[in-house]
Image 1: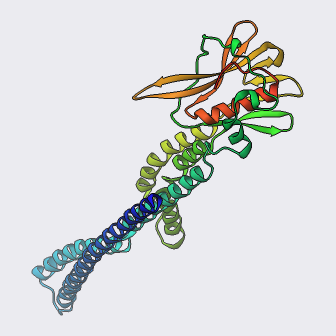
Image 2: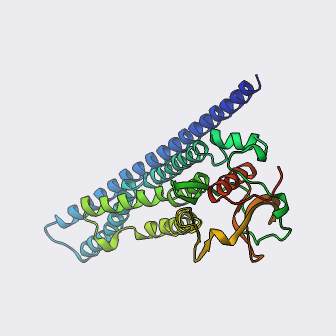
Amino acid sequence: MKKGIFVLLIGSFVLIGISKIGLQLKTTWDTQQRLYAGLLENIVKQQASVDELQARIDATESKAVLSDHDRWLIAHLGKVRDGQVKLLHGLQAQSQQFFLPLYRSWFGNGFMLVIFALTAAMALLGKPGRLSKEEQDWLQRPLHEIPDLYVDPGAHRHQLAPPGSASNFITARLKPRNAHQLGIVRSRTLTAMGLAFLLAPQGGLLFDLFTLTDTLLHTNTSFFELPWNTLSNSLMVSIPFAIVGLYLLFNTSHDVRIDRREQVIYLGDRTLPFRDVESLQLNQILATGERTYPNSQIQLNLNNGECLSLMNHAGDDAMYVDLVRLARFMGKPVALNR
């Protein structure tokens, strides 16, 4: 019953939103059509004015004998005609490009909406907090009933390893790379965010590139007379978003690999043998920023007293089952009670 109510409310909201968008598009299109009709009317008037001036010039030039006034009148009317012709050409050029800004806006916004929808679906369908059946079993069982897991609460340390950059959503999971390796994999949520930043603003840029290419290939417009200002404006928007997207895609991944065959943990620029790890620990910490939110952390307790943070984010259950997987994989005790 409750689920049906939520579905009904969400469906109503979506339908209302679609109807309002449709009404806004229709209003915008009708306004543009009225403006375009006025522009065409102005072009017709300017053309009639040019034709009238040309007719007066032709009539004066057709006289058998031209007086000084006739010559002055021809020159004067010629200047006025040339000005009118220049204005007419400008209006005609404007009419040819009249709907381009509107089409660009629609294409850019539509492209952005599609990308957001696809990346949102990607994030939801690949929800990082969704656990496998085995992980759900680990979550529901007491620690001492999980096969191949050694629990040693006495190995717990009060010293906390400095966490990495905190996050209020799941940014990574510990996943098998093959039968002998585990690795930290970027979550689909973070991947979807990176793709959204990278791709969503590019619709306007794609439209501008297509328009410039079409103008260059199918008109007499020279390369240097193309509307480069529009393209530069698109680049000013797309480049910063692309930088953020590329950063999320390539600079937020963890260069961590746990190799059971070699009995080594590769931590980026550091190599840590399994024998140096005394125990594994799950910490609950508070991350502060504009708001305070809880983070979970997998901590490596080393034999020399050092504590290292392997990964941290806001997914408590996901972090817990990742710790269980790591402890079973390495054969190391976990220092916690749950």
